[in-house]
Image 1: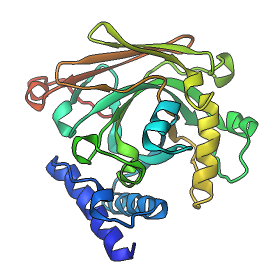
Image 2: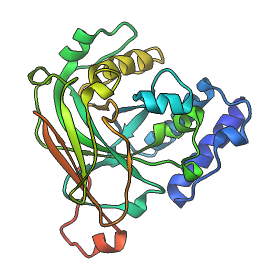
Image 3: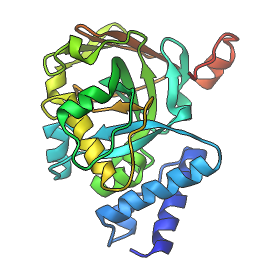
Image 4: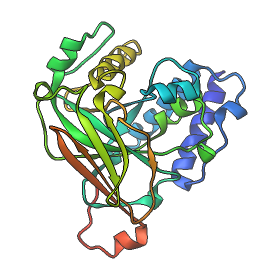
Length: 275
């Protein structure tokens, strides 16, 4: 795939952010799309957005469950970038119509205190780089129509990133066995999912190591202060205006996200959703 086609695909995806109109799968439009093309298309968008003043605040890892990997026919995760305007305060209203076809999932987020750069990062080096962990909710969204995504579609689309809500109870990474940390996921008071950290590549730490080594091979460093979302402990759930979601993790606390329409939010003079 030549640079002109990569640029065209990136522009289509960027336009979808603005128009809120999804596009057809890139894999149905560009027959020769490859893994390298997909990551290049992702980076073209990130370069465009950062040039316009946005800031990279971390990364997310996707496709960490065996079920998702089997569905897409892959054997390893993918990753995307987290930008500054992806972050919303918990309990504060999030306008659901900012997104196209949002879904949400519970995760255990890492906040780094020093840089990590692979390849060659080990688990103990990853642990030493973590400042603390937080309960988190990731809003995933796809610019691809009807979520008809293949691996290359979701990678090009910044790993279907949408938004992030972080909890406010930092915990030392050594205080909890993240493999065994169980979580319950509620929508409007009803349980919609359960799981444990072990659902994420055996441990969320394995996901962090994978990310550091994978992006390191591409010349990218995970920076101090950045947030890493390692993957969900259970299946994602669709989001609608009026929904309230809470994820509660044993030993880590809870995090809540509340969704409204833009009209509802505008009537709330105290709302200021971004961190």
